[in-house]
Image 1 (tube, rainbow, N blue to C red):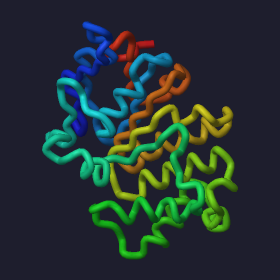
Image 2: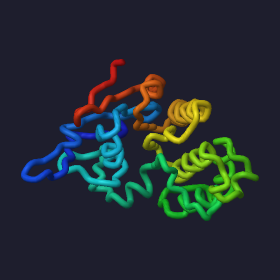
Image 3: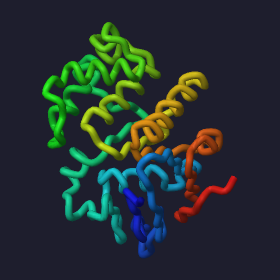
Image 4: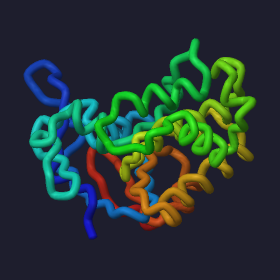
Length: 225
C-alpha cells in the first residue's frame, strides 16, 4: 500500500529570463517496509528532492502526500515534527550535548505519543544502534563519525515516525561502517516496517536497496542497473 507519494514535482531556479529546472515532473511512490535509494551524481537534484519530501522546502508545483494527506494540509512544521525523521550527512547534532541529550531533545518536541520514561527509551534506542550507556553519556564531539551517525539515526527514530529520510548518510564513513549502516536501514525497513529513503551517489548502496530510483537531468526513473 502506498505510504508516501511525490506527484508531478517541479523545482527550478530563476536564471535571467529563463528557469533552470532541478526537478521536472518528478513522480514516485513509496511503501512502508521497504528500503529505497535515490541514486544520482553531485548536482543531480537528489538532495533537493529529499528536502521536498522532508518539507524543508516547497516545490514550485506538484505535491507530496503522506497517507493521502498533502504536506500543505498537515502543515510543514507539524509534518517535520510528527511525520518524518531526517538524517543529515553532517549529522546536525547539538555539539555541546551528550548523545542521550540529543535524542531527548527530539523526543521533547514531537506531538506523537511516546512512553513516559523518555530517558529509558532513549538509552534503549541508542543501545539498539550500538551506542552503550557509557558512550551515550559522552558529548557527541567525543564520539567517532560512525557513532555520531548512529546517534543521528536514533534521534530520527525517537519520535516514533514511520518515514526515515537520509542524505548521503555514508559519505563520512569507512567501508566497514558503511556496511553496518546499510544493514541498520534494511532492518528498520524489513523488521520495523519503516519507509526508509536514502539519497546516494553510490551504485553499490543502491544495489542493496529494495527499490532504486535514478535522478538524471531532473527526471526520476526506476534504476534498472
